[in-house]
Amino acid sequence: MQRKIKRNSLAVHVIFALILTLTVISVSVVVTLAFRPLYYLDIAALNIPEQSGYSKEEIRENYDVLIDYNLSFGSDSLEFPSLAMSEPGRIHFEEVRDIFQIFKYMAIAGAALSIGGIVVFARKREYLYLKLTSILAVALPAVLGLLVALNWDWAFVAFHHLAFDNDYWIFDPLTDPVITILPDTFFMHCALMILGCVVLGSVICGVAYRKCHKRDNKNY
Image 1 (cartoon, rainbow, N blue to C red):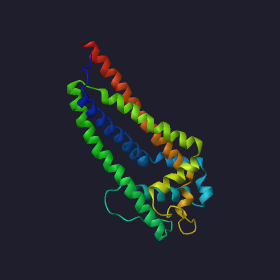
Image 2: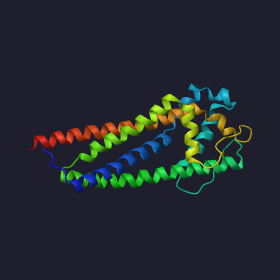
Image 3: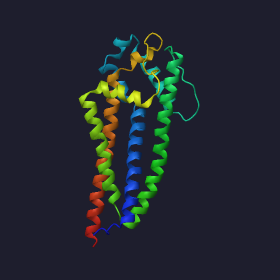
Image 4: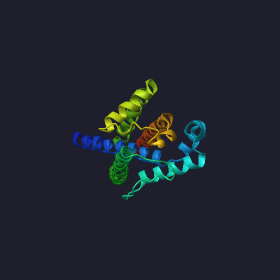
């Protein structure tokens, strides 16, 4: 039977569960950002060539440059191959990149801490943190998923008001035609993929907890 968790040890489990949950969320964001096939499928599904007036090849080329810019760790500047960009647009993309940088470093640091913590808890045969992470990681998608389901437009606008202290995210298609190849529905699909990845992380933690708990019960 799994050893009884002491109060001070319980606090450690809670803290580590929070770290692991943030890691799952950060990794989900980065994976979604890097998963280009999601956008490639939406090019046809959302009729982006017809809506924007650009060819499929041009759309993919410009999108790839944008993703490379957000995934890079250097100080490269953003230059679209065939799309104009205003100064406010450039500033907005720099702010977006800064947000993704935070998620990338959180994912890397969180993964390192998570691996170390998992090893330590495994040696102690304590797995409560897995159960706590499973609960925490599913609570966030439940709340956000409800907001998306009830009113995606409101959730989309509310996010931008929270994340940015200016209105540079409101693009003018004449000066920043990139907005014509990035429809709101695509961002909704990204949000759903992030939520799906987080839920998957929750399920993995829940299954791992049950298996580890069951295995320890058999050993006693």
